[in-house]
Length: 187
Image (cartoon, rainbow, N blue to C red; front, side):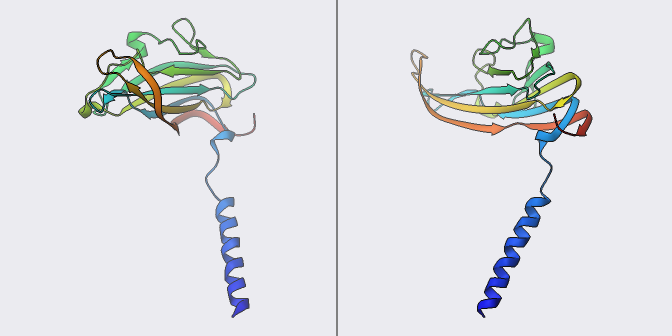
C-alpha cells in the first residue's frame, strides 16, 4: 500500500510538470508591429461621496531599441458609450510627463502613467465601470506594449472635495485583444 501512495504522488507531480510545460505561451516573447490593448477601470464617487475611486494606467515599452507610438486612446462607460476619444478630444497629458499632447511616442525602456483624474467625468452607478482601448504601433516588430491598471480608492471629504489617504489599491494586467504582423521571438 505504501508503494501505491508513492506511485500516485509521483504520478500527480509528473502530471503537474506536464501541465506547466504545455501552458499557454507567454506574451513576453510575443512580438508585433501593431496592436490593441483593453483595460478595465473605475472613475466615480461612492459611500455618500466619502470615497473616490479612479484608475491609473501604466504603459511600458520593454524594447531596449525601438519606440512605440500610442496612436489612439478610447474610454468607454459600462454601456459601451464613448467617454473620451483621443482622435476627437486630443491626446491627454500623462501624470509623469513621459507622454502628452505633443508626444505620443513611448521611447525604448520608457514607462508612462495616465490617470483618469481630470480626464473623465465622475460616473453614476449605471455607467460604471469603464474600459480603455489603446491602439499602438512600432516601426518594426517589438515586444508587445505592456499596460496595467491600478484601481485606487481614496478617502474624500464630500463637502470640500479634498482627497486624503489611499484606502486601497489593486493592480490588474490589461489584455491584448489584437496583434498585427506578429511572431514569436526574443528581443
